[in-house]
View (cartoon, rainbow, N blue to C red):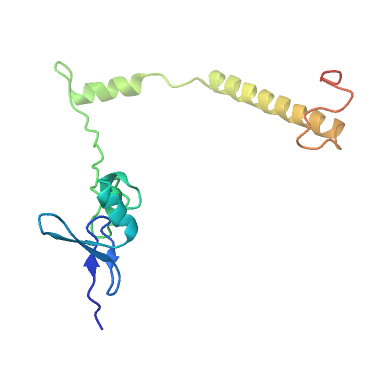
Length: 151
């Protein structure tokens, strides 16, 4: 069974049979309103688009779920290598490959520095956890250490 519903002129919600108010303007145009709240707002000349509970506001602020409308796809920029005036693409590629890679000594030095930093961090956390095992998490220091006399 299909129920005939009307649309509220203010909030744009459905008005089911037996509900709502028919208000006739001075010019003779009938206006269907879903509730006394909508009638009050219309009489006070409020704009439906400025009230968050109306469909007009939801439409303006893109809050409605439109399953039919699909978001516009953005195209990803495709990188294309081109020759520059006076140099061909092959020459440019050769120059790119000619840049010398890191030497083995540099790689070894970087690796050593990283290992030292990791070892120092591990040692630091080990000292912190073993010395103060019974300190609550929200308390920063033990009673006899840093900041003990401050209040």
